[in-house]
Image (cartoon, rainbow, N blue to C red; front, side, top):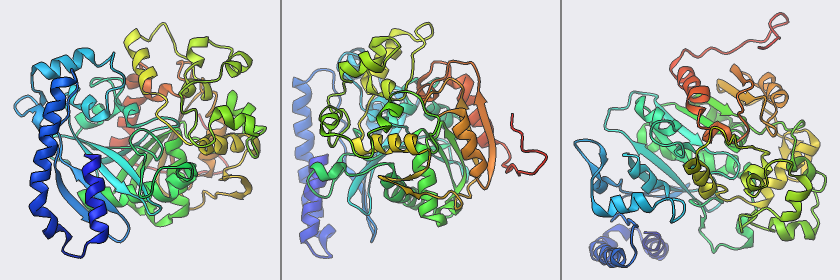
Length: 466
């Protein structure tokens, strides 16, 4: 499919305004060729499904070029809304754990869901993939939710707990229109208008807020209804990108009904763990450090250097081998995690990021400020953030500390609540993958979304928080 889109785009650049007319006659034949190729591959590659996709819509505007592949209806039983029983699908299900991470579209099919993959082009040339879970029910007004993953994550974050516990599925069951974001640099968002080279990785979360989220918001509203308001749910880096967008583009405040930020990384003065150690040299990292962190993509081999584990890791060594858990100082509760879930986490995390993104956070730990990359004097003001916001934190989170999130809470113009999870073993990544997240976190999220929005007003007498 990617090859097809690249070819179409190349033709488009050299054609005139009658592009669609000139290509339409050839498109069907070319698509049939692709389908036949996929059929032949199925014979040779056991257990893999390649949905026969076709482009059903193509929208072009001044800001971006967007392609929407069709949803994967072929594998859904219309009567039960579950995967159609077939030998290839059953084989795929049985082999999923041993062939590596299952792509999100196929994962959704295994969970009995309809899904669409949408690609959005940002103003600075990055292609961003967003996944939309479909429901057969009619979606009420203002029930569209954007889910943005955290540091080193992907859209899989919101589905890894399965169809009964994952937040994406719980929202879908509650009649929400669910869109899953993939930030630039992860598995699903690595394409660019130009060739991918070292300059591709010159970004941090700042560009995600400046370019990615505005393009995604514009696109989603164009698809559903420009007059609706969205609900945003972001974990970790998702919260960073969200407040950055509202600061740089204040008019986007009007596009959101509310936001829920889980352990957002905005102020990090009290962060513990490897990011604090890295903060000492993050402003001007030595070449030796970049050699094993990666000068461009962060830990592209998905391994933490052994010397760093021995020097800085006090927890189980096997957990510290995972970069996501190591740099977020997260710990698995082995008494509550089964082997299948641990294997899933290791398959999906980390999903990719730029080294500059990690260094940017490390700089914030050292400075204690919310500022632009390599310049702590260029602080990002939160005075333009007007969206009603709920914050979540945990006293077991070593990277997004309760005290730092309290600081963010007092900076907001319209805070709804600050929900502090105490003594539940919820570390930074547990907000999305803990086996009890549905009861501890997600049930509260649904209550906030369905409840009445009231901003907390600070006065001299009510300044104390729970």
